[in-house]
Length: 249
Image (tube, rainbow, N blue to C red):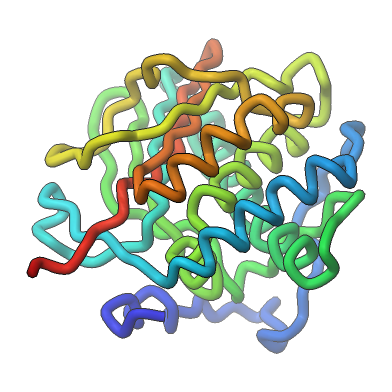
């Protein structure tokens, strides 16, 4: 993993509840009614993750962060309510989804597939790292820290897709699931990622992996970026993978 991300990878919150790093236990009381990934969908995402990993680690240096190095996976979220509970619940759900995506990624890569939803990685192992917050509507920008940094620099498109699915699972109903869309991101963004819907997007969800997987693979092969987008009544979420940076010649 690139040394310039050590400041994220080595960060550990210390609480009395922490256990050794190797332990993966549940930190969520959610009960899930959605089924796990089918073997075919699991294999599709696993193949995408393997393709990305074979291309090597990569980071980005966004101009809007002053060139600071971050993983190639940025989470942008906006909550339109004015209550602290709703804002904090959104943050918690996103963090749990990120940690559950990390656990699912490990299971898919290690076992070659997964048919159930694992417990999220423990908070001492990784999660979301706050990069920016804005006044007005609750508007935040985050990336990954801890052991998730390695996943976000080696297989960011696949991990972003798993995080979107994991957030659907956390909501626990087909009625709320399958509202994501995804699209390739062709050019780098000089400004902070917006919450505008991507153009020419394709539905993404547990039932849509077949439709979007070819677009994800093409974006990976061409070193392009990718965006997953969700817009609901109270909040908007975008998972952005910037295009891969190439060393200056």
